[in-house]
Length: 206
Image (cartoon, rainbow, N blue to C red; front, side, top):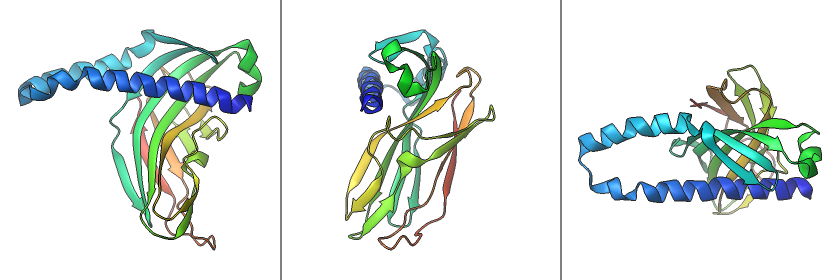
């Protein structure tokens, strides 16, 4: 239960930050194309400089290092339309009350991936993006923390869509993580017959 509460707290903090930043960019929609080009460069620099973005959460003090809210990786896996929407890396100084949920560690690195999965068929499909694995350029292989993540996997009973954040707890310094590979097994039908191959996508984090 405690692990689920931690996940909900961190997930909510990430989504709230996203809404605020997206609304802040709305006044630029009527700018000329060349002005948009000039504005795009500082946006990437700003993401790298998010080291100063420190949030106090119930789970501890979280320092954000990188955020990309426009990953835009989309694919079709059998009847599932799947997209990776956002990614964020951060360092969490774990509050004493939540250390057990993070393996009694004082600090951990969080890699959070926001995804959408949609079943386009009337059949019941099994798909588990919240049980994915990531590998990092620093040599780590990390399984998703299913109890911290949103419920974006499981049975898709007919034409349903699920969206949410998937949490990965790493040990590398987030400054050193410049890319990750997100790896998820393809969906299966009610008889657990595979409907698509394993999907791997590389996402820059710098």
